[in-house]
Structure formats: C-alpha cells, structure tokens
Length: 449
Image 1 (cartoon, one colour):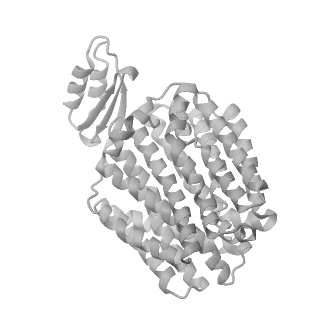
Image 2 (spheres, one colour):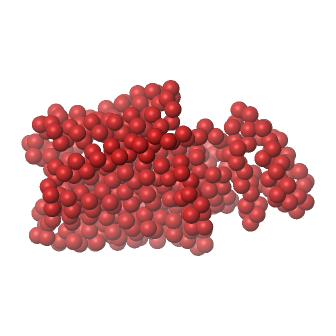
Image 3 (cartoon, one colour):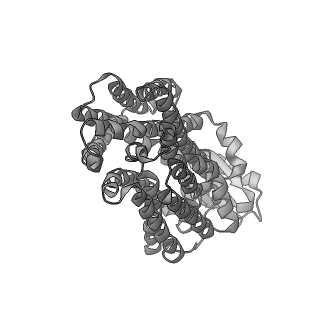
C-alpha cells in the first residue's frame, strides 16, 4: 500500500471506530441503568439496546446507492450528522422512550456502504482487499473497546455521558472525512464495493449466501439477547457496574486466544464443521446460564465460552460471504449481509425485552438456546468456496463484443465465474488461482489494442 492508501485506510477505519463505539458502549450498561428511568420496562430496555439495528438494516443499501449518485463524502458526512443528532437526543432524554428514539436516530446514519465504496475508490485493485481488511478489523476492535469503556465512562459521567461523548466523537469524525480522508483518485468498479438495489433479488436467491445471512442475523440476535441479561446477572453476583469491565477484559483476552485455537482447527475440517463447533460453544454457554448457579466464576467461564464461539463466527462469516458472492455482486452480497446483521441486533433486543417483561429473564436464555439448536441444521448443507480468488479487469469493447470476451475469459483454465458490466467496461472474475494465468486474462481483456 502506498502512503495515500495507508492514510485512507487509517482515517476510514478511525471513522468506523468513532461511530461504532457510540453504538456499542451502551450495551454493557443499559440493562442496569435503564431502571433509573420513570418509564422503565424491560421491553424499552431491549429496544434501546437493539433499536439502532432496524434503521441501520433498512437504510444500509439505499444509503450506499445514494453515495453513487451524490458522492461518498456527502453521504458519509450526512450520516454522521444524523448519528450525532441521535446521540444528543438520547443523552438529553429524561425518559427511556427518549433514549429509544435517540438510538433509532443513531442507526439512521447508515454509512457502512458509502465508507466501503470510498475505500474502494481511493485504493488500487491490488490493494483493495487490504484496505477492506483494515476497516473490518476496526469494527471488531471497536466492539471490544466499547465493552470495556462503557462501564468506565458510566461510572464517571453516567448514561447520558456515554451519549454526549458519542456525539463528540461523531462530530470529530466529520472534519476527518472532509479534510483527512483522501478524495477519490479513481472510481472502483461499483459492484466490488457497493450494494446495489438491482442485485438484491438475485443475491437473495443464492442458497449458500442465505445460510450465511441467516447465520449473522442469529449471531447478532444472540449477542443482543445476552447483553439484555448479563449486566444484571453480574451486578446480582456482587460486582458493581463500574467494575464490570474488570470481568469483561479477561473474557475478551482469553476468547481471542481461544479464537486462535479454533481457527487452527478449522483448517483441517470442512467449511460447516468449525461453525457448528462454534455454535456448540454457544449452546454450552446458554445451557449454563439456564441451569448453573451463576457465581462470578461461572459467569466468567460462560462468558468465555460464548465469546470464543462468537468471535470465530464474527470473523469468518464475512470472509465466507465475500468468497461465495457471484462475480460482480460482492458489494451487494456484503450489503445484504450487513442488513441481516443489524436486523438481528434489533430482533434480539426487541424479543429479549418483550420476553423479560412478560415471562421473565430466564426464558431469554431458553430462547437463545433454542436459536442455537435450530441454527445447527441450517449450516449442515453449507459447502463454501471461499478459496476462489477475485480479479477485476478493465475492458476495451470497441473492437470486440462483450459476449466474445466473456466466452474467451470463461475458457481460461481456473476461471469459475465471469460477469461483464457493459456500462463499467469491466470484467469480474472468480478463479482458482493455482490454475489461473492472469497475464492471459489481461491479454484477452486488452486484445483490441
């Protein structure tokens, strides 16, 4: 990566971290602090924790498409402004209902598609995957940091302090977009980075992708279900809220070590087996929450089991989606995946709140256990092909038809999928790299010259 690409990667990742911190920091504290509001109910707490996911899910693809029409930076800045407004609304709210409204507004700043598209625009084709990886890592980092910082900030500034700090962070991200993130030096082929409404129906018909979309929906249902209950259990076990981070920190550190072991094991198994093993860890965790005496040590152990499984799935599902997506539809596949992810957070918070209010918190863990058990057969037919590599080739169609080029590219050894987009004059290829000759493909793409 050159200096411009490194600058773009760091600045765009920083924007992601600043924004995602604000969305995540309330998760480990809201179930406890929500009780201080006069209109407290478990249902409203669930909505406040997961409500951002609904507006994120609904607006994810439209905001990405809008960025293709009016520009990446205007959409990103507009989304950040909406996020800041939502943070101020939630911070100044004197009711839990007001917090819920603020969370929905926070989620309306759905800029993920525009950020990824801009990352593609300011990077060369050969460096684009590195750029995306850096941004992806920043999302995971922001979650872990948020779980630690949430209780610490709350102890000093209260729940409103989290939202006001979030608003400040979102405000700081705006000049970062305007003045630090490089302007586009080229336009990346949009189907590599941008979710397109026209592709949604086609991608939703892909059975393997739908298994992964449903999987991320269920995974984020589970993480939201967990955080509607876990902070209260830790407090009940005698650990004050301001010290919850002392329990989360070793869980997260040890879970990363467990993730490494699971990753190593996965190299020797079929694609579905490691994911089913990770779900097995979630099953053990939720069974423990139901049937074990929940002392601090037990909560630590169950939390560790959950986060090893969660981390593995959270890290691997996007890579599988990226590998399986049809040539020329990776951006749409990832946009749909993100929409399922955020909608899962909304469903988890809403269901957990309703169940807790009407039937009691213990049944939330029973629901989580049932979800995990139902999830296992969904993955039984999964046979991912993420070993395939992608290439994007610029075409000159003046002296050769698209159909003829497609036939010649498809005939090359190792080529598994070819999509040619006439308006972009671009060919998208998925190939088995060990059998593929890139130079031959380039010669075919440019043979009119």
